[in-house]
Structure formats: structure tokens, C-alpha cells
Amino acid sequence: MGVTAPLPVTDRFLEVLERLSERSVEDYYNPYQTFQWPETLEENRFWMTPELLTVYGTEHYDTLGEDTLQRLSKWESVNFYSLNVHGIRELLIEVVGRIHMPGFEVPSDFFHHFIGEENEHMWFFSEFCRRYGNKIYGSTAMRADAAWEPEVENFLVFTRILFFEELVDHYNSRMAKDESLCHTIREVNRIHHQDESRHIAFGRELVSLLYSRMCQAVSADRVREVEAYLKRYVVYSVNSLYNPHVYRDAGIPDPLALRNALVADPSRRPHERKAIRKPLSFFLRTGIFSDDTLPVV
Image: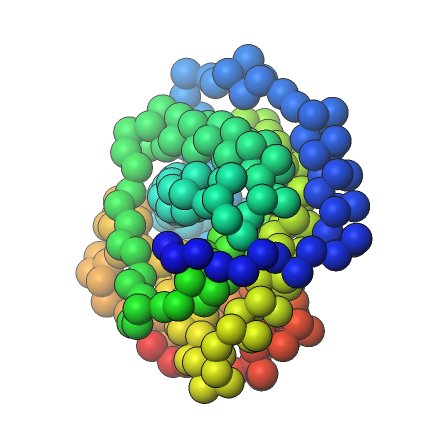
């Protein structure tokens, strides 16, 4: 990570930092005392809101049967929290590498709250996976296809973090309110949503400033390359929800074929778009994306 120019800090950014830091202190909780983990969770019920399942809206949702859908919901739930564990690990590494470093002097105080809260999130997501799934599903990171300039690298780090948080929050906010889910699952999602609302507000402000700094530092062609990379990252992130190991654990025959069929199924696109509606709208509004066309993988 190279040295970059100072952030083009605004009064609004300073006000947001102060307000969010105060809320972090006021809303603080000890997760090791907050959560009451039952020995087991009931198997013959949904562990994830049915509309959030990766088969929802396809012929497979209608043909798998309720028992299989409930099993699938368990393992999709474990996969979702596993993705959180891996995503949080990545963002912690990146943010820790920038706290109190040149170019990030102003937001570093809030980084302390951010790092502490995300570390606790990673703990309770991993605790859920290990207690009720006896595993944390693996994940593969998407590699950058270029050596980025420092301004580009910093922008991409926090834009990826923001997108990840907004995608996850779509699921959290829905499941937190779903009374058909058990109390433990609702609480995990409710508490994460409570914290992520602050992180998303912070992330949008920081990404806007980093985008401005990047556009001043690199060519218009480079900015277009960054947009193309981010669009591939959006598709990669959405596709990570379609995990053949999940389908195998749910007892579904030929899990890889199902995964490929779902990723290619046009009836899934409206549900994916719904999940990424908020970050996509932000990217369009700020000029990060010139249009809402995403690549087909």
C-alpha cells in the first residue's frame, strides 16, 4: 500500500464520524454475554427466510419439497454466516493495515470502533456455524487483475467492504423481522443489522471521498477499468451464495449441476437485484457505476 494524498474531508464527514462514534459507545454490548446459545436448534423448521433461499423463484423451489427446503435453509444459513466470517476477516486485515496511516488520519478514531465491532461479529457468526453446523464453509477470494495505484487500491478496499456490508444487511434486516425463524437466528441478524447500519453510513461517506481522490489521481481510462472490476466483484459476491457444498449437505442430487443451473437461471436475476438494490443505487448515484449493467459469468 503506497502513500496517498490526504482525504478531501468535508464538514459532513466530520459530523458523521462524530455521530457514529457516539452511537458506537451508546449502543455497545458484550456479545459474549448477550447471546444465549441453546444446545441445538430445531431441525424441522426454516433457518432462513424462504424468499432468501437461492432456489426461490425457480422450478426447484416448487419441486424439492418442504423437508428438503428446510434442510437447505439450514445449510444456506450456515453458508451465509460462513461468508460473513471470511468477509469480515478480509476487511479487518485491510482496515488494520490503514489505521493511523497517512491518508487515513481523520477516520482512524472510528476505525477503532469498526475493528472492535467487526471482530465481535466474526466471533458470533463463527460460533453459530460451529455450534449448529459443525463447520465453517470455505471461501475463495477474487483476485485483482491489475496492480492498482495506491488511490485505486484504497478506494477498492473500502468499496468492496461497503458492498459486502450492504449485501449482508439485506439478509440481516429481513431475517431479524421474520417471526417464523427461531429466536437465536433472529437475534444474530438483529444485532448485526444494528451495528451494520452505522458501518454502512460511514462506508458510504468514506467511499465517496475516496472516489473523489481516486478520480483526481488516475486517468479516465483507469476509472473505467475500476468500474469493470467492481462490477465483476458484485457478480462474484452474489454467486458465492450459490454453494454446491450446501446443496450436497442438504441431500440434493448432483449439487454442482444445481449450482450451475441456478446461476444461469434468469428467474433468479430479480431476486439478486433486490438483494443488491441499495448498493447499486449508491454506485449509480455517485458515478462509480455509469450504468446498472452487470457482466454475465
